[in-house]
Length: 178
Image 1: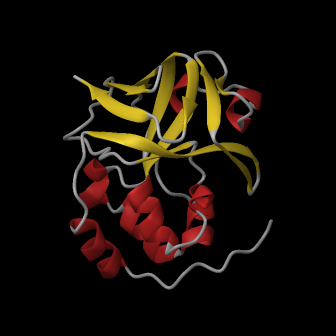
Image 2: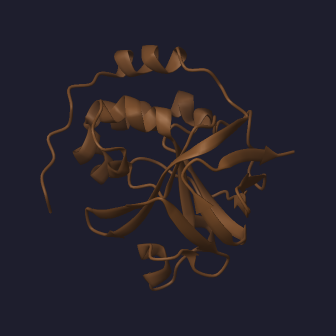
């Protein structure tokens, strides 16, 4: 496993920076990533999403018993940018980085998202930072995204299931279905 020196972050600085962000109900796809396993990731300009296979080429489809509740991960690119301090955002380990507020007051479990021609459903599977996230971004970043008082913000992102497949590309519009 490659060693990554996390940037010097602290909880208060992350919190102050986050409070300056605007909340958005629609947005765009900023980054598409296939997780290949371990620390390896491949960024793509476009990706195919499938209801049975998830993101084609992602490690999820090769799992022993992949859970539909964890088929695809989304993270607000603004959070990835804050914790990454200018480093490569694909290190977050998420399939899709979006410019969208993913908090509970904007998107409910079972709610649907439209990404280009694809339809996703937000699942009830929690998406929290882990020891790999801490290795990549530092313990303060992990503490910030997982802090119990802010869980409703979903700073670490969300898990989704693909309902209607198709091709998505960087720059595609993203809409919360009401």
